[in-house]
Image (cartoon, rainbow, N blue to C red; front, side):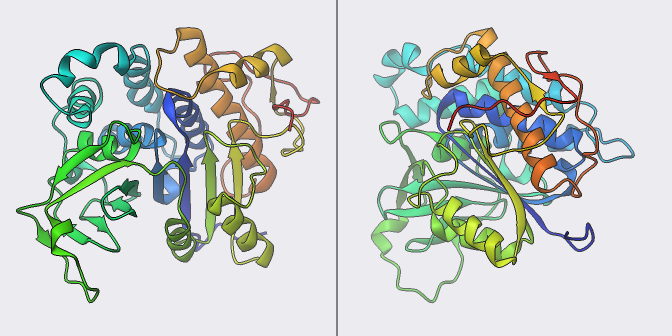
Length: 352
């Protein structure tokens, strides 16, 4: 068992569409209750999970933490804007604006209106260190946004914290058909020893990276002793094609790291923990039937996804790293009361 002292905790979140966005909200709610949210040193996200972490980062300074390190107002800060966003589909309102602006610019304006206002990276915290990963279609490289610099291995990194959070989140979460073109002219560049194609320094065409790439995962492992991974999309245990899963499994097997890995479609045998939150089998089936795109999500489906993320995160953390937080007891029910505590039942996840 690893000591609570001298631990550096990284949290990685992924997944596409409103389904993953809401699932990750539930995960963050339970991590907060376990006293882990404030302990996280590094938070990395890709795709629609970046919408969730973007809201968290933008409003971090408004969170009220009690003496145990638990935010007493996280649900009020995080959940309502995500519900508002998922109650409408961008595809239903995109055609008109497309005649006047690009899809990426339209989405950025929409996210500003619903989620972020005019906030910039200057307003996000230094700790945890938020990292939003996108893909630069012009260089073919993963592009990483941090508070003070942004860029990729081929183009280099621009310096400054004046980028709007709405642009950052769109760049990290937008489908390839709705990329965001970011004008790079006028920025200061971080000195680089690598040869840089100057033509690539005029603009970047950015979209979701879909999964955490191998380079990003390597950096996470290098900076952390504890790694928590919440996958809002793929089946777990995942295939070798998922570099995040493969790298994490190797690190855990070698004993160089400890951590937990859970997902929206985790199998029933993944978390053998007694006293977990349980639900009817029909509820589990409904989760898996939900589409992963950006179509309108009903209020009930929103409740379901948030509660699912909450319950599965509770089971994973108490199974694999129970010493990490104040996880001695299970909650009596999930935020929207769709999952209930059972002192003897084991977690009922989706069939593997």
